[in-house]
Length: 126
Image 1 (cartoon, rainbow, N blue to C red):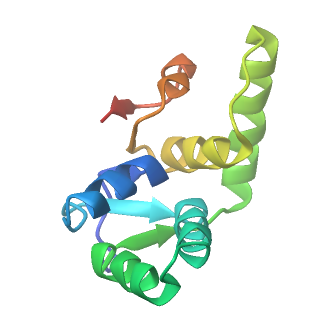
Image 2: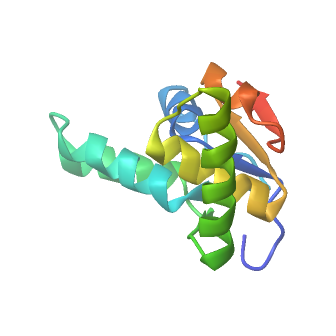
């Protein structure tokens, strides 16, 4: 995806579904540094870490990986406050994915209901 504008950010749950179906990520997709770290951590605790790391590499071949910026931190903080005021909580890693999707103005594809409570997020439940 060299320089191409991403259309969607795939949460860890979305990538795992693709991996279970032996599919590569769709064109125009990207993943976050969080998703990459979560996938790698899961692979390392599996029965065959090398094989799982290879599956991750194959599934994500050519994918752009989004890293946080100063803007990501500002968006993260704003969304955290919005949820705190509502009395809602989501996991820290999920909040990073939310911030990156909002910052880049792209959809977040995931299998977690709690993303639906974030006003500025373009959320697609998979």
